[in-house]
Amino acid sequence: MIRILLAEDTAILRDTLAAVLNLQDDMEVTAEVATGDRIVTAARQYKPDVALLDIDLPGVDGLTAAAVLHDQLPECRVLILTALAVPANLRIALEAHVAAFFLAKDTPAAELIHAIRIVAADGRVIDPALALATLQARPSPLTDRETDVLRLHSEGLDPREIASQLYLSYGTVRNYLASASDKLGARNRIHAIKIATENQWL
Image (cartoon, rainbow, N blue to C red; front, side):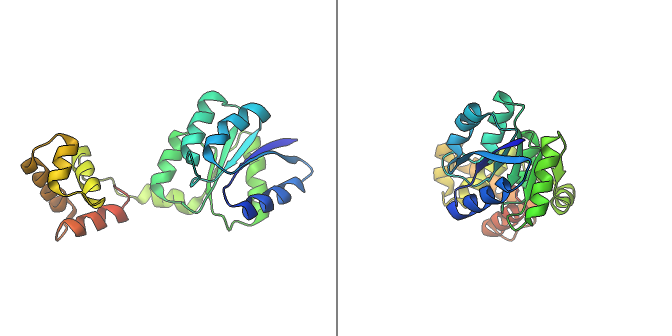
């Protein structure tokens, strides 16, 4: 019997998933949680074989919880079921040793059930379209400091506020913003933020 922990904050989706999985002869949902901060505690208590996690959870996100599960309960395999299937999250998932990831929430039940069985047998399931997008994604041309400055600017901080927060001079922040815009081929700072955001470099 494959014991499953289900972490999903939308009650109707969580209930539906649990009902579908419990219909399988070889599966049992032994724990259900609605917030990310309850995942590890529930996993310690119920010892699931597979944790089916959403990423965007209250408290602690699913990817952070997946990394903790790998460290503390490596025998619990993680499958991510999410609408946030983007290359940046895939890279984080790989670092967290997620076994199956980014099956969209509109995935047919049969595919999800098949994926859980693969994961329980120590296999891996990778969304092919997302894997290709990740391989094709360009690396960021920005330095870490340029990224930090541009991210803070995207959050509404002006150069003086950024300088204060990062313990830099006002002129240095302006130089970082200018160099980031130049590297991205942007017309201005707003355009630079748009380019960096679309490429998931922030």
